[in-house]
View: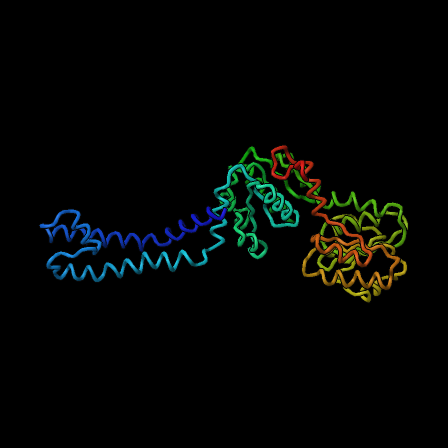
Length: 385
């Protein structure tokens, strides 16, 4: 990949300097023709050497002296300036990554840099499977770009960006965006460009999943549905009130599921949404606040009546608050079962120090997705997994 990057970078710089090199060539060619006319006593080889200022005619004359003065200057500024000043500088990694993506064939295209996308990319890298990623937020993929991976920065619904990802030659596409509108538009445009490739779409709503299957023959899945299969084991047969903290569809699924269990009240803390996708009942209390202290929780309920707490934050910036709240719950209310969603495997031990159970929706979703892909997929399970 590094060799390919090198040649791509040279190509980009040559393209950038094409006018300068064209001017240099025309200047040389003009000098060659002029020497050919004004120095008829010399043969072509000698004229060629004059044009490169390797030799000078005797006597040189005004034109010969002027040419021998200007040619080395142009040669130094354009040629040596290009080699030394440009090839040794840091090239534009975004353009290089985009060109790398456009050269992929029979590859995997991932749309949206989600936690599940990270696992797909890691698996492709581990098994030397060709892939490229489309993401409109440059900051999220800065490390991948600097590492030399094929990344297309831009709106995935734009045909130009899909073309840069060489969708026509892709064997499969994973769409991991949170906006179902974007997912539908991407699926439609991808299917027009590539009628044969496998398309896997993360979609929460059941009616969206049905539409994607019927209209575009796309396999759609819900990571929150898959995660609930494991969470249901932790909640079956339990009693007492429950606290659920988070913002996404999994958080809402947990809250709704638990609110349907007899004799349990559920307090959902979601600071971004006033409601959820499910029918709200009297057992479910939605609180539009951000909580990170025990005092925030005590304002709304008696923590002695709470038996389970699910903390489903997923922003890296909130891990400190998550760890603080978990530690305080373990210290003051050790009888409460605490369940924490963790995306970074290296942080699991820190959470377990406070007797909290951890779960990863992306890890579980990746394993479930591996069961659904075709045999030629880049993420199909290997024997050594």
